[in-house]
Image (cartoon, rainbow, N blue to C red):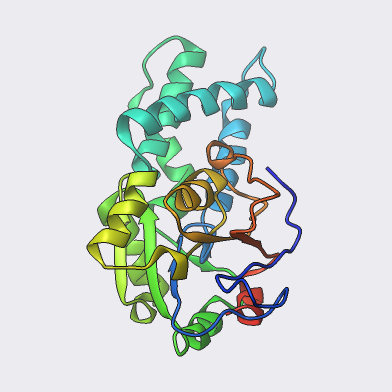
Length: 249
């Protein structure tokens, strides 16, 4: 992934560098690891899981590679969320021990992932206040991918739903996801910005759909969401923190 250096762009070609964009833009926000910490919770569970496994021959790095491969396959076959994650942990155990997981082992894996199962949400610093201010200047929307019920519960717990003119939960974020969103809601791509931490799901497909994008890297971004962001792309604004949005919007 590219480094989080800050660079500004604008839909107005006459605007000066780093000048705020005019009011009335459409700002579409990713949820997990943009508005609240999520993958960090998964990473904590994985660390506890690796401690719990105590494999006699493989080190943590080797086991993590196996788990990453299983997660990648399950994401394609079953989607995203804590249920799929727990499935991956169970399948990794079975792969390593060459036998089905016992009921006790599955219960212990579930116990390791209590925070995920309970859908706890940790807002990133300044998110609520920043959304409150931005909502007075622009139209805000939320676009998140994953299990419908699970994502909706996280949104409910976050107490952020009232900031958004629309909340969109999708199975995957691809170019056609963004094209359909702009068409369905009559959004003008040149005045629409996708804001997120994932090059793979937030930034690159939004740019391919003709939108602008704001890339706010998160050090805990899931490895399966890593991708390169073109450093020469003037349609991407790179920021260090969520609260920096107030300097540009």
